[in-house]
Length: 610
Ligand code: ADP
Ligand code: MG
Image (cartoon, rainbow, N blue to C red; front, side, top):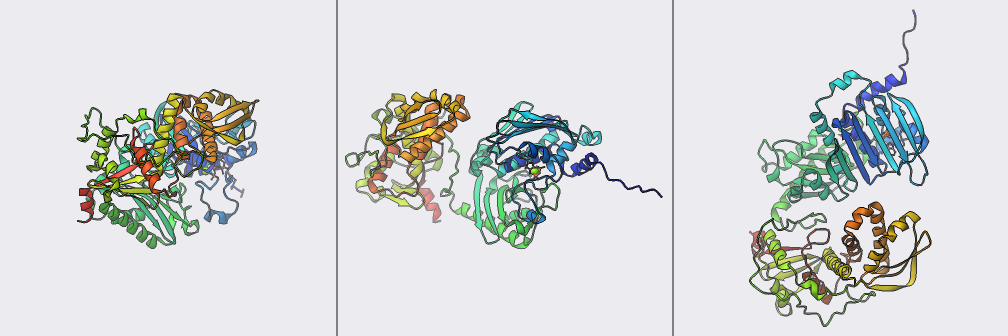
């Protein structure tokens, strides 16, 4: 008898394997986005047409690949992420089977351009149905651009199996959201049929959740945090009153990888017991960190399912930490203060009229005016100049009103200023972690030192810029920065703006920037770091920068110049900070829009003891 067994041609084997990895456009999106994250990208753009059926493109600014690696990446079992089978148990990056790109290239028309930082030329590669049809050098920015066209062009049966654009797009968004949720420090955008669907700047988890699920979610989140010897749990659950009847707000990540696990979902459900009606689902975005040796993530080809060695303990830990978090939230709603994170407090509603408080306050009042001299050169002061008179005729009363309305406290500002010599309520105390607290007429006020100082500096820089009164202190040893000539040319356009902010800079030759003086309010190291960040901003998008230049510069400078939360202030310094804060136009927000203070009224205080 003749032998009948034959090895499948590679292309066919790849197509079959592809079936496991690539089920629909969403699977391609997931693999490409995860690769970009793995490549260290800080910015990832996803561009799709027709729900990804005709085109999926991912542009990242990650590490890029060499010419050979670019070619290798599309081979099956080609991966830079594991070398030995044991590595499978240690791996923490996203994909790790070395199959994704090969599978995608087996069932679509792929075009890849990639370049590493420092390489002069990038490589370009075209592959269709596993066949390389073109390979050459190209000009391309650092990072990788992969474009996947006409998915399943060579497997009509699979192509016909795809659902409507609507359904496929829903799957695609799900994958996009999961990767974006797990990597809040990475900026993501999604463009579908030329419409912007998401534009998520780099931020913290709270901001990312608000970016994905909606701004309102910022106020609906209850932080969860638990560290144990087997697992660390962090993230948020949704306050029970906002639970939905449909599922979709459940995100569970293990070692930063999205997973589905009914068992753990039950653990969270259990913790919400008594708080939800049976047809409601708890919402959560939880991250679990666990030693990869104790999990097996490879049991499912698309890797969303997972097995734990010790499921029972993990169940118990999750349930109790979520319960604990919910309990805390019920007890101390307004002291949920650890929000590095709070994005914004609602501003005045449109058209809302504001009633002036009944007391006239002298905003220039400063009980320590005589005892504090602003010092710039590292004396004992806070290192900022006192706000100019002109800035003090401000609309803070209105804002203050809205702030007190927000927190339901009747705070009397005049009381705060004038009481301090006599009444107990006026004493400022410093708390651990960068806060100050002061009693008010009928409650208390908590202040965030660093943010308050940022606000003060920010408005000071703004005034300097507007009045062209930026003041520099000369450096003993001028600092020299070497920059690529292109950067320097860009920067030259903003030289006068920088000088206005107090940077005394000169350009030498094609590549040298010499800093001779720095803003009065900043220390040398802070100034130089701020300057570098400003330069980065200009490089990143000079047009955007120029639209808003003083704001951009002041924001950065205030961030570097503001007192660190760990720094202990003297009593006069605290008073000075408070006085300066309340002479600001917008005392209750830091320049990034986060609250500088929280007030608790008598009612709220009473509630704690009920
Ligand atoms: P895996 O991610 O499992 O290693 P893939 O087929 O997804 O397998 O990718 C193969 C290899 O190609 C990766 O290990 C990585 O070295 C490289 N690669 C893929 N995408 C990118 C990217 N966007 N930037 C840089 N390198 C990439
Ligand atoms: Mg991968």
